[in-house]
Image 1 (cartoon, rainbow over the protein chains, first blue to last red):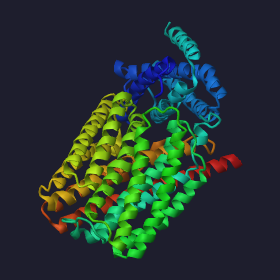
Image 2: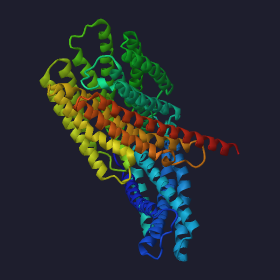
Image 3: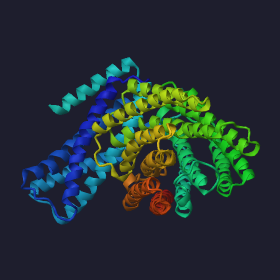
Length: 173
Length: 427
Protein backbone atom coordinates (compact mmCIF):
# COMPACT_ATOMS: atom_id res chain seq x y z
CA UNK A 1 0.00 0.00 0.00
CA UNK A 2 1.05 3.57 -0.67
CA UNK A 3 2.44 5.61 2.24
CA UNK A 4 1.05 9.14 2.64
CA UNK A 5 3.85 11.75 2.60
CA UNK A 6 3.41 14.91 4.65
CA UNK A 7 3.43 17.18 1.61
CA UNK A 8 0.54 15.20 0.09
CA UNK A 9 -1.42 15.65 3.34
CA UNK A 10 -0.72 19.38 3.37
CA UNK A 11 -1.85 19.80 -0.24
CA UNK A 12 -4.94 17.69 0.50
CA UNK A 13 -5.82 19.91 3.46
CA UNK A 14 -5.60 22.98 1.27
CA UNK A 15 -7.80 21.26 -1.33
CA UNK A 16 -10.40 20.77 1.40
CA UNK A 17 -10.30 24.46 2.33
CA UNK A 18 -10.47 25.60 -1.29
CA UNK A 19 -13.39 23.32 -2.08
CA UNK A 20 -15.27 24.57 0.94
CA UNK A 21 -14.83 28.17 -0.29
CA UNK A 22 -15.70 27.20 -3.87
CA UNK A 23 -18.89 25.50 -2.75
CA UNK A 24 -19.95 28.58 -0.79
CA UNK A 25 -19.31 30.72 -3.85
CA UNK A 26 -21.11 28.25 -6.12
CA UNK A 27 -24.16 28.09 -3.87
CA UNK A 28 -24.30 31.88 -3.69
CA UNK A 29 -23.99 32.28 -7.48
CA UNK A 30 -26.63 29.63 -8.18
CA UNK A 31 -29.00 31.10 -5.62
CA UNK A 32 -28.53 34.62 -6.93
CA UNK A 33 -28.85 33.80 -10.64
CA UNK A 34 -27.10 35.65 -13.45
CA UNK A 35 -29.63 38.38 -14.16
CA UNK A 36 -30.06 40.19 -10.85
CA UNK A 37 -26.89 41.60 -9.27
CA UNK A 38 -26.55 41.04 -5.52
CA UNK A 39 -27.06 43.85 -3.04
CA UNK A 40 -23.48 44.69 -2.09
CA UNK A 41 -24.54 46.83 0.87
CA UNK A 42 -25.35 43.61 2.70
CA UNK A 43 -22.22 42.43 4.52
CA UNK A 44 -22.90 38.73 3.87
CA UNK A 45 -22.99 39.39 0.13
CA UNK A 46 -19.81 41.45 0.29
CA UNK A 47 -18.17 38.65 2.25
CA UNK A 48 -18.93 36.07 -0.44
CA UNK A 49 -18.33 38.27 -3.46
CA UNK A 50 -15.23 40.00 -2.15
CA UNK A 51 -13.79 37.94 0.71
CA UNK A 52 -14.24 34.49 -0.75
CA UNK A 53 -13.12 35.32 -4.28
CA UNK A 54 -10.04 37.09 -2.92
CA UNK A 55 -9.34 34.14 -0.62
CA UNK A 56 -9.70 31.63 -3.44
CA UNK A 57 -7.43 33.70 -5.71
CA UNK A 58 -4.74 33.92 -3.01
CA UNK A 59 -4.95 30.21 -2.18
CA UNK A 60 -4.86 29.23 -5.82
CA UNK A 61 -1.88 31.50 -6.51
CA UNK A 62 0.12 30.07 -3.59
CA UNK A 63 -0.88 26.46 -4.22
CA UNK A 64 -0.15 26.61 -7.95
CA UNK A 65 3.05 28.57 -7.36
CA UNK A 66 4.36 25.95 -4.98
CA UNK A 67 3.47 23.09 -7.32
CA UNK A 68 5.01 24.71 -10.37
CA UNK A 69 8.17 25.92 -8.62
CA UNK A 70 9.05 22.96 -6.41
CA UNK A 71 6.87 19.93 -6.98
CA UNK A 72 6.34 19.64 -10.73
CA UNK A 73 10.05 19.83 -11.64
CA UNK A 74 10.72 16.99 -9.21
CA UNK A 75 7.93 14.85 -10.69
CA UNK A 76 9.00 15.75 -14.24
CA UNK A 77 12.48 14.45 -13.41
CA UNK A 78 10.81 11.16 -12.50
CA UNK A 79 9.21 10.93 -15.94
CA UNK A 80 5.79 12.35 -15.00
CA UNK A 81 5.93 15.05 -17.70
CA UNK A 82 2.48 14.41 -19.13
CA UNK A 83 0.60 14.73 -15.85
CA UNK A 84 2.67 17.76 -14.89
CA UNK A 85 2.02 19.34 -18.29
CA UNK A 86 -1.72 18.72 -18.03
CA UNK A 87 -2.01 20.17 -14.51
CA UNK A 88 0.23 23.15 -15.34
CA UNK A 89 -1.90 23.80 -18.43
CA UNK A 90 -4.99 23.91 -16.24
CA UNK A 91 -3.23 26.32 -13.87
CA UNK A 92 -2.81 28.69 -16.81
CA UNK A 93 -6.59 28.76 -17.28
CA UNK A 94 -7.66 28.79 -13.62
CA UNK A 95 -5.24 31.35 -12.20
CA UNK A 96 -6.21 34.28 -14.47
CA UNK A 97 -9.86 33.36 -13.99
CA UNK A 98 -9.53 33.48 -10.17
CA UNK A 99 -7.44 36.67 -10.17
CA UNK A 100 -9.80 38.36 -12.64
CA UNK A 101 -12.82 37.51 -10.48
CA UNK A 102 -11.14 38.86 -7.35
CA UNK A 103 -10.27 42.11 -9.16
CA UNK A 104 -13.79 42.55 -10.52
CA UNK A 105 -15.28 41.79 -7.11
CA UNK A 106 -13.06 44.41 -5.49
CA UNK A 107 -13.98 46.98 -8.17
CA UNK A 108 -17.70 46.30 -7.71
CA UNK A 109 -17.43 46.57 -3.93
CA UNK A 110 -15.56 49.85 -4.27
CA UNK A 111 -18.21 51.11 -6.70
CA UNK A 112 -20.99 49.92 -4.37
CA UNK A 113 -22.71 47.70 -6.94
CA UNK A 114 -22.34 45.51 -10.01
CA UNK A 115 -23.87 46.70 -13.27
CA UNK A 116 -26.17 44.06 -14.80
CA UNK A 117 -23.64 43.37 -17.55
CA UNK A 118 -20.72 43.08 -15.12
CA UNK A 119 -22.71 40.78 -12.86
CA UNK A 120 -23.72 38.48 -15.72
CA UNK A 121 -20.05 38.13 -16.70
CA UNK A 122 -18.94 37.70 -13.06
CA UNK A 123 -21.65 35.10 -12.49
CA UNK A 124 -20.68 33.06 -15.56
CA UNK A 125 -16.96 33.21 -14.84
CA UNK A 126 -17.55 32.44 -11.16
CA UNK A 127 -19.41 29.23 -11.96
CA UNK A 128 -16.77 28.38 -14.54
CA UNK A 129 -14.04 28.85 -11.92
CA UNK A 130 -15.89 26.65 -9.42
CA UNK A 131 -16.25 23.79 -11.88
CA UNK A 132 -12.72 24.08 -13.31
CA UNK A 133 -11.03 24.27 -9.92
CA UNK A 134 -13.09 21.43 -8.41
CA UNK A 135 -12.39 19.26 -11.47
CA UNK A 136 -8.71 20.19 -11.20
CA UNK A 137 -8.66 19.22 -7.53
CA UNK A 138 -10.35 15.89 -8.37
CA UNK A 139 -7.51 15.15 -10.78
CA UNK A 140 -4.86 16.22 -8.27
CA UNK A 141 -6.46 14.09 -5.56
CA UNK A 142 -6.51 11.07 -7.87
CA UNK A 143 -3.28 11.54 -9.81
CA UNK A 144 -0.94 14.02 -8.20
CA UNK A 145 -1.17 12.90 -4.58
CA UNK A 146 -0.64 9.29 -5.66
CA UNK A 147 2.35 10.31 -7.77
CA UNK A 148 3.83 12.16 -4.78
CA UNK A 149 3.50 9.00 -2.70
CA UNK A 150 5.19 6.99 -5.43
CA UNK A 151 7.98 9.34 -6.50
CA UNK A 152 8.84 11.71 -3.62
CA UNK A 153 11.31 10.22 -1.14
CA UNK A 154 11.40 11.02 2.58
CA UNK A 155 14.15 13.61 2.29
CA UNK A 156 12.37 15.52 -0.48
CA UNK A 157 9.12 15.21 1.44
CA UNK A 158 10.64 16.94 4.45
CA UNK A 159 12.15 19.69 2.29
CA UNK A 160 8.93 20.27 0.33
CA UNK A 161 6.80 20.28 3.48
CA UNK A 162 9.07 22.89 5.09
CA UNK A 163 8.98 25.07 1.97
CA UNK A 164 5.23 24.79 1.72
CA UNK A 165 4.73 25.66 5.40
CA UNK A 166 6.95 28.72 4.92
CA UNK A 167 4.85 29.83 1.94
CA UNK A 168 1.63 29.42 3.90
CA UNK A 169 3.09 31.34 6.86
CA UNK A 170 4.33 34.12 4.56
CA UNK A 171 0.90 34.63 2.94
CA UNK A 172 -0.82 34.53 6.34
CA UNK A 173 1.31 37.45 7.63
CA UNK B 1 7.43 0.39 -12.35
CA UNK B 2 7.56 1.96 -15.79
CA UNK B 3 8.15 5.59 -14.94
CA UNK B 4 8.86 6.73 -18.48
CA UNK B 5 5.16 6.80 -19.15
CA UNK B 6 2.85 9.18 -17.37
CA UNK B 7 -0.78 9.92 -16.73
CA UNK B 8 -1.38 11.61 -20.05
CA UNK B 9 0.26 8.76 -21.91
CA UNK B 10 -1.92 6.38 -19.94
CA UNK B 11 -5.02 8.16 -21.19
CA UNK B 12 -5.89 5.80 -24.03
CA UNK B 13 -7.34 7.18 -27.27
CA UNK B 14 -10.96 8.09 -26.51
CA UNK B 15 -12.25 5.59 -29.06
CA UNK B 16 -10.92 2.62 -27.05
CA UNK B 17 -12.90 2.93 -23.81
CA UNK B 18 -15.85 4.63 -25.54
CA UNK B 19 -16.46 1.74 -27.92
CA UNK B 20 -17.03 -0.53 -24.91
CA UNK B 21 -19.23 2.06 -23.20
CA UNK B 22 -21.21 2.53 -26.45
CA UNK B 23 -21.76 -1.21 -26.65
CA UNK B 24 -22.97 -1.19 -23.04
CA UNK B 25 -25.47 1.60 -23.67
CA UNK B 26 -26.87 -0.17 -26.76
CA UNK B 27 -27.16 -3.54 -24.98
CA UNK B 28 -28.99 -1.75 -22.16
CA UNK B 29 -31.66 -0.63 -24.64
CA UNK B 30 -31.80 -4.14 -26.10
CA UNK B 31 -32.29 -5.84 -22.73
CA UNK B 32 -35.17 -3.67 -21.59
CA UNK B 33 -36.65 -3.85 -25.11
CA UNK B 34 -36.63 -7.66 -24.98
CA UNK B 35 -38.23 -7.65 -21.54
CA UNK B 36 -40.86 -5.15 -22.72
CA UNK B 37 -41.80 -7.67 -25.44
CA UNK B 38 -41.36 -10.96 -23.59
CA UNK B 39 -41.39 -9.97 -19.89
CA UNK B 40 -44.52 -12.07 -19.20
CA UNK B 41 -42.19 -15.03 -18.80
CA UNK B 42 -40.04 -13.38 -16.16
CA UNK B 43 -42.06 -14.31 -13.03
CA UNK B 44 -41.11 -17.89 -12.28
CA UNK B 45 -38.12 -17.88 -14.63
CA UNK B 46 -35.43 -20.27 -13.41
CA UNK B 47 -33.25 -20.53 -16.50
CA UNK B 48 -33.26 -22.10 -19.95
CA UNK B 49 -32.98 -20.60 -23.43
CA UNK B 50 -35.37 -17.92 -24.63
CA UNK B 51 -35.69 -14.13 -24.72
CA UNK B 52 -35.42 -13.85 -20.91
CA UNK B 53 -32.02 -15.57 -20.87
CA UNK B 54 -30.90 -13.35 -23.77
CA UNK B 55 -32.08 -10.21 -21.92
CA UNK B 56 -30.30 -11.31 -18.75
CA UNK B 57 -27.03 -11.78 -20.63
CA UNK B 58 -27.51 -8.48 -22.46
CA UNK B 59 -27.21 -6.92 -19.01
CA UNK B 60 -24.50 -9.13 -17.49
CA UNK B 61 -22.31 -9.41 -20.59
CA UNK B 62 -23.53 -6.57 -22.81
CA UNK B 63 -23.66 -3.88 -20.13
CA UNK B 64 -21.63 -5.37 -17.28
CA UNK B 65 -18.65 -6.96 -19.00
CA UNK B 66 -18.44 -4.18 -21.64
CA UNK B 67 -18.43 -1.46 -19.00
CA UNK B 68 -15.89 -3.42 -16.97
CA UNK B 69 -13.62 -3.72 -20.04
CA UNK B 70 -13.85 -0.01 -20.90
CA UNK B 71 -13.41 1.15 -17.31
CA UNK B 72 -10.63 -1.27 -16.37
CA UNK B 73 -8.42 -0.72 -19.40
CA UNK B 74 -8.65 3.04 -18.96
CA UNK B 75 -8.79 3.55 -15.21
CA UNK B 76 -6.51 0.83 -13.85
CA UNK B 77 -3.41 2.18 -15.64
CA UNK B 78 -4.18 5.68 -14.32
CA UNK B 79 -4.85 4.50 -10.76
CA UNK B 80 -1.88 2.13 -10.64
CA UNK B 81 0.54 4.36 -12.64
CA UNK B 82 1.41 1.31 -14.73
CA UNK B 83 0.77 1.34 -18.47
CA UNK B 84 -1.31 -1.26 -20.24
CA UNK B 85 0.95 -3.37 -22.49
CA UNK B 86 -0.20 -4.08 -26.01
CA UNK B 87 -3.06 -1.60 -26.30
CA UNK B 88 -3.85 -3.15 -29.70
CA UNK B 89 -5.15 -6.22 -27.89
CA UNK B 90 -8.09 -4.13 -26.65
CA UNK B 91 -9.19 -3.85 -30.28
CA UNK B 92 -9.03 -7.64 -30.47
CA UNK B 93 -11.16 -7.93 -27.34
CA UNK B 94 -13.79 -5.68 -28.88
CA UNK B 95 -13.71 -7.40 -32.26
CA UNK B 96 -14.26 -10.78 -30.59
CA UNK B 97 -16.84 -9.45 -28.13
CA UNK B 98 -19.26 -7.74 -30.53
CA UNK B 99 -19.92 -10.64 -32.92
CA UNK B 100 -19.72 -13.04 -29.98
CA UNK B 101 -22.45 -11.21 -28.11
CA UNK B 102 -24.67 -10.83 -31.16
CA UNK B 103 -24.44 -14.53 -32.01
CA UNK B 104 -24.82 -15.56 -28.35
CA UNK B 105 -27.89 -13.37 -27.81
CA UNK B 106 -29.45 -14.75 -30.97
CA UNK B 107 -28.63 -18.31 -29.91
CA UNK B 108 -30.07 -17.81 -26.44
CA UNK B 109 -33.15 -15.96 -27.67
CA UNK B 110 -33.98 -18.43 -30.44
CA UNK B 111 -32.74 -21.50 -28.52
CA UNK B 112 -30.24 -22.38 -31.26
CA UNK B 113 -27.45 -24.54 -29.87
CA UNK B 114 -24.90 -23.88 -32.62
CA UNK B 115 -25.26 -20.12 -32.34
CA UNK B 116 -24.92 -20.35 -28.56
CA UNK B 117 -21.76 -22.44 -28.91
CA UNK B 118 -20.12 -20.12 -31.45
CA UNK B 119 -21.19 -17.00 -29.56
CA UNK B 120 -20.01 -18.38 -26.23
CA UNK B 121 -16.65 -19.38 -27.73
CA UNK B 122 -16.07 -15.86 -29.08
CA UNK B 123 -17.16 -14.18 -25.82
CA UNK B 124 -15.01 -16.55 -23.76
CA UNK B 125 -12.03 -15.73 -26.01
CA UNK B 126 -12.68 -11.98 -25.68
CA UNK B 127 -13.05 -12.00 -21.92
CA UNK B 128 -10.19 -14.45 -21.49
CA UNK B 129 -7.97 -12.01 -23.40
CA UNK B 130 -9.29 -9.19 -21.20
CA UNK B 131 -8.49 -11.17 -18.03
CA UNK B 132 -4.98 -11.83 -19.31
CA UNK B 133 -4.37 -8.11 -20.08
CA UNK B 134 -5.58 -7.06 -16.63
CA UNK B 135 -3.57 -9.73 -14.82
CA UNK B 136 -0.48 -8.76 -16.81
CA UNK B 137 -0.98 -5.15 -15.68
CA UNK B 138 -1.68 -6.04 -12.06
CA UNK B 139 1.41 -8.25 -11.94
CA UNK B 140 3.52 -5.14 -12.62
CA UNK B 141 1.77 -2.92 -10.04
CA UNK B 142 3.94 -2.08 -7.04
CA UNK B 143 1.50 0.10 -5.15
CA UNK B 144 -2.01 1.41 -5.59
CA UNK B 145 -4.18 3.90 -3.69
CA UNK B 146 -6.55 1.02 -2.84
CA UNK B 147 -5.75 -2.65 -2.26
CA UNK B 148 -5.27 -4.48 -5.57
CA UNK B 149 -6.89 -7.59 -4.04
CA UNK B 150 -10.29 -6.84 -5.54
CA UNK B 151 -8.94 -6.71 -9.08
CA UNK B 152 -7.08 -10.02 -8.64
CA UNK B 153 -10.15 -11.73 -7.18
CA UNK B 154 -12.29 -10.32 -9.98
CA UNK B 155 -9.87 -11.61 -12.62
CA UNK B 156 -9.78 -15.12 -11.14
CA UNK B 157 -13.57 -15.08 -10.79
CA UNK B 158 -13.77 -14.16 -14.48
CA UNK B 159 -11.65 -17.16 -15.41
CA UNK B 160 -13.81 -19.37 -13.20
CA UNK B 161 -17.08 -18.11 -14.63
CA UNK B 162 -15.82 -18.48 -18.22
CA UNK B 163 -14.84 -22.09 -17.47
CA UNK B 164 -18.30 -22.82 -16.07
CA UNK B 165 -19.91 -21.02 -19.03
CA UNK B 166 -17.99 -23.32 -21.37
CA UNK B 167 -19.16 -26.34 -19.35
CA UNK B 168 -22.79 -25.20 -19.46
CA UNK B 169 -22.75 -24.66 -23.21
CA UNK B 170 -21.09 -28.05 -23.76
CA UNK B 171 -23.64 -29.63 -21.46
CA UNK B 172 -26.41 -28.15 -23.63
CA UNK B 173 -25.07 -30.30 -26.47
CA UNK B 174 -23.89 -33.43 -24.67
CA UNK B 175 -25.93 -33.39 -21.44
CA UNK B 176 -23.22 -34.68 -19.09
CA UNK B 177 -23.66 -32.42 -16.04
CA UNK B 178 -25.47 -34.11 -13.14
CA UNK B 179 -26.71 -30.93 -11.42
CA UNK B 180 -26.92 -28.30 -14.13
CA UNK B 181 -28.98 -25.85 -12.02
CA UNK B 182 -26.32 -25.69 -9.31
CA UNK B 183 -23.54 -25.20 -11.88
CA UNK B 184 -25.58 -22.43 -13.50
CA UNK B 185 -26.08 -20.82 -10.07
CA UNK B 186 -22.34 -21.02 -9.34
CA UNK B 187 -21.68 -19.47 -12.77
CA UNK B 188 -24.08 -16.63 -11.88
CA UNK B 189 -22.48 -16.06 -8.46
CA UNK B 190 -18.99 -15.93 -9.96
CA UNK B 191 -20.20 -13.56 -12.69
CA UNK B 192 -22.13 -11.02 -10.65
CA UNK B 193 -20.67 -11.18 -7.13
CA UNK B 194 -17.25 -12.37 -8.27
CA UNK B 195 -16.16 -10.73 -11.52
CA UNK B 196 -18.42 -7.66 -11.47
CA UNK B 197 -18.88 -7.41 -7.71
CA UNK B 198 -15.20 -7.41 -6.83
CA UNK B 199 -14.40 -4.97 -9.62
CA UNK B 200 -17.22 -2.69 -8.44
CA UNK B 201 -16.02 -2.83 -4.83
CA UNK B 202 -12.45 -2.13 -5.91
CA UNK B 203 -13.37 0.76 -8.20
CA UNK B 204 -15.64 2.16 -5.47
CA UNK B 205 -12.49 2.88 -3.48
CA UNK B 206 -10.94 4.84 -6.36
CA UNK B 207 -13.73 6.45 -8.35
CA UNK B 208 -16.28 7.36 -5.70
CA UNK B 209 -13.83 9.28 -3.46
CA UNK B 210 -12.69 11.14 -6.57
CA UNK B 211 -16.21 12.08 -7.65
CA UNK B 212 -17.38 12.99 -4.15
CA UNK B 213 -14.02 14.30 -2.90
CA UNK B 214 -14.47 12.17 0.20
CA UNK B 215 -11.86 10.22 2.15
CA UNK B 216 -10.91 6.94 0.44
CA UNK B 217 -11.97 3.84 2.39
CA UNK B 218 -9.75 2.79 5.28
CA UNK B 219 -7.10 0.57 3.66
CA UNK B 220 -7.02 -2.03 6.46
CA UNK B 221 -10.78 -2.51 6.55
CA UNK B 222 -10.93 -2.46 2.77
CA UNK B 223 -8.49 -5.39 2.69
CA UNK B 224 -10.50 -7.20 5.34
CA UNK B 225 -13.67 -6.70 3.27
CA UNK B 226 -11.87 -8.08 0.21
CA UNK B 227 -10.66 -11.11 2.20
CA UNK B 228 -14.12 -11.78 3.60
CA UNK B 229 -15.67 -11.39 0.16
CA UNK B 230 -13.15 -13.83 -1.32
CA UNK B 231 -13.79 -16.39 1.41
CA UNK B 232 -17.56 -15.92 1.06
CA UNK B 233 -17.42 -16.32 -2.69
CA UNK B 234 -15.20 -19.40 -2.61
CA UNK B 235 -17.31 -21.17 0.02
CA UNK B 236 -20.62 -20.29 -1.67
CA UNK B 237 -19.42 -21.52 -5.05
CA UNK B 238 -17.83 -24.63 -3.52
CA UNK B 239 -21.04 -25.31 -1.58
CA UNK B 240 -23.09 -25.14 -4.77
CA UNK B 241 -20.70 -27.24 -6.84
CA UNK B 242 -20.29 -29.92 -4.12
CA UNK B 243 -23.96 -29.76 -3.09
CA UNK B 244 -22.99 -28.87 0.49
CA UNK B 245 -25.65 -26.48 1.85
CA UNK B 246 -23.79 -25.82 5.12
CA UNK B 247 -20.67 -24.73 3.25
CA UNK B 248 -22.85 -22.53 1.04
CA UNK B 249 -24.49 -20.93 4.09
CA UNK B 250 -21.14 -20.21 5.77
CA UNK B 251 -20.07 -18.56 2.50
CA UNK B 252 -23.28 -16.55 2.47
CA UNK B 253 -22.66 -15.27 6.02
CA UNK B 254 -19.09 -14.23 5.15
CA UNK B 255 -20.34 -12.55 1.99
CA UNK B 256 -22.95 -10.61 3.94
CA UNK B 257 -20.33 -9.48 6.49
CA UNK B 258 -18.08 -8.36 3.61
CA UNK B 259 -20.94 -6.37 2.11
CA UNK B 260 -21.71 -4.75 5.46
CA UNK B 261 -18.07 -3.73 5.92
CA UNK B 262 -18.00 -2.37 2.37
CA UNK B 263 -21.21 -0.39 2.91
CA UNK B 264 -19.89 0.99 6.21
CA UNK B 265 -16.76 2.16 4.36
CA UNK B 266 -18.92 3.76 1.66
CA UNK B 267 -21.04 5.46 4.33
CA UNK B 268 -17.90 6.84 5.95
CA UNK B 269 -16.70 8.10 2.60
CA UNK B 270 -20.01 9.84 1.91
CA UNK B 271 -19.93 11.47 5.36
CA UNK B 272 -16.56 13.02 4.52
CA UNK B 273 -17.57 13.94 0.95
CA UNK B 274 -16.66 17.53 0.20
CA UNK B 275 -18.87 17.54 -2.89
CA UNK B 276 -22.50 17.60 -1.86
CA UNK B 277 -24.28 18.14 -5.18
CA UNK B 278 -23.71 14.76 -6.80
CA UNK B 279 -26.55 14.64 -9.32
CA UNK B 280 -28.72 11.77 -10.53
CA UNK B 281 -25.77 9.41 -11.01
CA UNK B 282 -25.37 9.12 -7.26
CA UNK B 283 -29.08 8.36 -6.82
CA UNK B 284 -28.30 5.22 -8.81
CA UNK B 285 -25.16 4.47 -6.81
CA UNK B 286 -27.05 4.88 -3.52
CA UNK B 287 -29.83 2.65 -4.87
CA UNK B 288 -27.24 -0.02 -5.67
CA UNK B 289 -26.02 0.10 -2.06
CA UNK B 290 -29.54 -0.76 -0.89
CA UNK B 291 -29.96 -3.47 -3.51
CA UNK B 292 -26.70 -5.29 -2.72
CA UNK B 293 -27.64 -6.61 0.76
CA UNK B 294 -31.24 -7.07 -0.42
CA UNK B 295 -29.98 -9.34 -3.18
CA UNK B 296 -28.07 -11.42 -0.62
CA UNK B 297 -31.16 -11.72 1.57
CA UNK B 298 -33.22 -12.88 -1.42
CA UNK B 299 -30.41 -15.24 -2.39
CA UNK B 300 -30.58 -16.86 1.04
CA UNK B 301 -34.35 -17.19 0.74
CA UNK B 302 -33.98 -18.86 -2.65
CA UNK B 303 -31.16 -21.13 -1.49
CA UNK B 304 -33.18 -22.34 1.51
CA UNK B 305 -36.26 -22.89 -0.62
CA UNK B 306 -38.32 -20.13 1.01
CA UNK B 307 -41.12 -19.07 -1.42
CA UNK B 308 -38.86 -20.42 -4.15
CA UNK B 309 -41.16 -19.53 -7.07
CA UNK B 310 -40.92 -15.88 -6.16
CA UNK B 311 -37.62 -15.56 -4.30
CA UNK B 312 -35.42 -17.24 -6.94
CA UNK B 313 -36.35 -15.08 -9.95
CA UNK B 314 -36.63 -11.96 -7.78
CA UNK B 315 -33.13 -12.66 -6.43
CA UNK B 316 -31.75 -12.77 -9.97
CA UNK B 317 -33.56 -9.59 -10.95
CA UNK B 318 -32.57 -7.57 -7.87
CA UNK B 319 -28.97 -8.78 -8.12
CA UNK B 320 -28.52 -8.05 -11.83
CA UNK B 321 -30.86 -5.14 -12.52
CA UNK B 322 -31.14 -3.73 -9.00
CA UNK B 323 -27.57 -3.83 -7.77
CA UNK B 324 -25.19 -4.36 -10.68
CA UNK B 325 -27.01 -2.33 -13.33
CA UNK B 326 -27.79 0.58 -10.98
CA UNK B 327 -24.16 0.84 -9.88
CA UNK B 328 -22.71 0.54 -13.38
CA UNK B 329 -25.07 3.07 -14.93
CA UNK B 330 -24.50 5.53 -12.09
CA UNK B 331 -20.75 5.30 -12.57
CA UNK B 332 -21.09 5.39 -16.37
CA UNK B 333 -23.01 8.66 -16.14
CA UNK B 334 -19.99 10.17 -14.39
CA UNK B 335 -17.20 8.52 -16.38
CA UNK B 336 -18.51 9.46 -19.84
CA UNK B 337 -18.39 13.26 -19.30
CA UNK B 338 -15.27 12.99 -17.12
CA UNK B 339 -13.23 11.24 -19.80
CA UNK B 340 -14.66 13.48 -22.52
CA UNK B 341 -13.46 16.50 -20.57
CA UNK B 342 -10.00 14.98 -20.11
CA UNK B 343 -9.75 14.36 -23.86
CA UNK B 344 -11.05 17.81 -24.78
CA UNK B 345 -7.91 19.32 -23.25
CA UNK B 346 -5.56 17.12 -25.27
CA UNK B 347 -6.51 18.49 -28.66
CA UNK B 348 -5.38 22.00 -27.76
CA UNK B 349 -7.34 25.01 -26.55
CA UNK B 350 -9.27 25.47 -23.34
CA UNK B 351 -10.57 22.12 -22.05
CA UNK B 352 -14.34 21.79 -21.70
CA UNK B 353 -15.70 20.89 -18.29
CA UNK B 354 -17.75 17.73 -17.60
CA UNK B 355 -20.92 19.83 -17.34
CA UNK B 356 -20.52 20.75 -21.02
CA UNK B 357 -20.90 17.04 -21.84
CA UNK B 358 -23.64 16.28 -19.32
CA UNK B 359 -27.25 16.30 -20.47
CA UNK B 360 -28.90 16.80 -17.08
CA UNK B 361 -32.46 16.14 -18.28
CA UNK B 362 -31.48 12.90 -19.97
CA UNK B 363 -29.60 11.78 -16.84
CA UNK B 364 -32.53 12.59 -14.57
CA UNK B 365 -35.04 10.95 -16.94
CA UNK B 366 -32.92 7.84 -16.99
CA UNK B 367 -32.66 7.71 -13.19
CA UNK B 368 -36.42 8.19 -12.71
CA UNK B 369 -37.28 5.55 -15.30
CA UNK B 370 -34.76 3.13 -13.77
CA UNK B 371 -36.32 3.49 -10.31
CA UNK B 372 -39.82 3.09 -11.79
CA UNK B 373 -38.78 0.03 -13.78
CA UNK B 374 -37.24 -1.69 -10.76
CA UNK B 375 -40.32 -1.00 -8.66
CA UNK B 376 -42.86 -2.16 -11.26
CA UNK B 377 -40.93 -5.27 -12.30
CA UNK B 378 -40.40 -6.25 -8.64
CA UNK B 379 -44.16 -5.83 -8.05
CA UNK B 380 -44.75 -7.95 -11.14
CA UNK B 381 -42.61 -10.70 -9.61
CA UNK B 382 -44.27 -10.45 -6.23
CA UNK B 383 -47.83 -10.56 -7.57
CA UNK B 384 -46.83 -12.84 -10.45
CA UNK B 385 -48.24 -10.40 -12.97
CA UNK B 386 -46.50 -10.54 -16.33
CA UNK B 387 -48.28 -7.36 -17.43
CA UNK B 388 -46.69 -5.38 -14.59
CA UNK B 389 -43.27 -6.75 -15.56
CA UNK B 390 -43.77 -5.58 -19.13
CA UNK B 391 -44.98 -2.18 -17.96
CA UNK B 392 -41.87 -1.86 -15.78
CA UNK B 393 -39.70 -2.97 -18.67
CA UNK B 394 -41.27 -0.24 -20.81
CA UNK B 395 -40.20 2.29 -18.19
CA UNK B 396 -36.74 0.70 -18.27
CA UNK B 397 -36.69 0.96 -22.06
CA UNK B 398 -37.59 4.66 -21.86
CA UNK B 399 -34.77 5.16 -19.35
CA UNK B 400 -32.35 3.22 -21.54
CA UNK B 401 -33.23 5.47 -24.47
CA UNK B 402 -32.64 8.51 -22.24
CA UNK B 403 -29.20 7.10 -21.37
CA UNK B 404 -28.52 6.54 -25.07
CA UNK B 405 -29.45 10.18 -25.65
CA UNK B 406 -27.07 11.16 -22.81
CA UNK B 407 -24.24 9.16 -24.42
CA UNK B 408 -24.95 10.63 -27.87
CA UNK B 409 -24.82 14.09 -26.32
CA UNK B 410 -21.35 13.32 -24.91
CA UNK B 411 -20.24 12.06 -28.31
CA UNK B 412 -21.66 15.08 -30.17
CA UNK B 413 -20.11 17.61 -27.78
CA UNK B 414 -16.75 15.80 -28.02
CA UNK B 415 -16.99 15.87 -31.80
CA UNK B 416 -17.75 19.62 -31.74
CA UNK B 417 -14.87 20.30 -29.33
CA UNK B 418 -12.44 18.33 -31.49
CA UNK B 419 -13.56 20.15 -34.63
CA UNK B 420 -13.22 23.53 -32.91
CA UNK B 421 -9.72 22.63 -31.67
CA UNK B 422 -8.70 21.59 -35.20
CA UNK B 423 -9.92 24.92 -36.57
CA UNK B 424 -7.93 26.79 -33.91
CA UNK B 425 -4.81 24.73 -34.66
CA UNK B 426 -5.16 25.35 -38.42
CA UNK B 427 -5.66 29.10 -38.00
